[in-house]
Image (cartoon, rainbow, N blue to C red; front, side, top):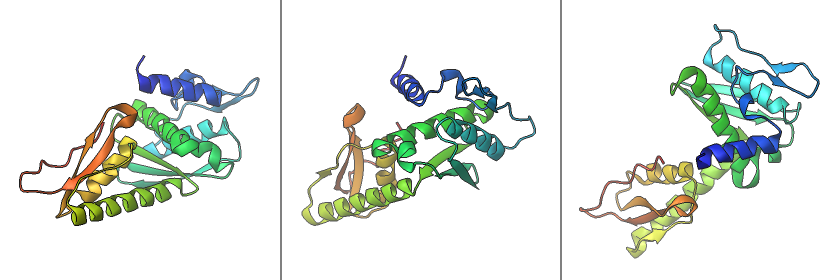
Amino acid sequence: MDDKKRGLDDLLSDLGIGENETAPEVVLKEEEAAPIVTQPAPAQDPKSVLEHFMVGLLLRLDPAYSVDIAQEENLFRVEILGGDSGRVIGREGKTLQSLEFIANVAMAKHFGSAYRVMLDAAGYRRRNEERIRRIASDAALQVEVSGQPIELPPMRPSERRLIHVMLKQHPKVTTTSVGEGEERHVVVLPRTASSASPENDLE
């Protein structure tokens, strides 16, 4: 069993949800209660399938949760509303990240890689992206002034990717990722004529 699968199992166990309840087509049941998620009709569009799944999943946590979904081409932005936002965000956003992973797995079972899901709650993702952008800007300025590379703290793949994208066109600095696993991090270094292209950090 790989790390992602084990992590997903652990999360679902913590939430009291069985592995076979992670896809929209599977019936989710409360103890001795009627199903709260039923198989979506074949005619439903991707947004409806996603909404159906997210509502069913969140109902398992707290009926106070609801979702607002906005579609931007093949990207669905899902805002989780109501309830205890801290519970769905988790420490350092890990629960939100795991719920997002589950949502993407569920959509992939229906539509392959055609769509991507991004979750947010109480503006956490937006604030975190702003924080990462500030870190990138500050590091780029320091490298530009000092001429010395700077190693940033370990980050999740999505955060490293944001820094790579943000500084890709910077005229004075470039980026790469080093390290393995949870220690993988971005290095911001001076751009030279011989600098390699920024790493496509999609792992």
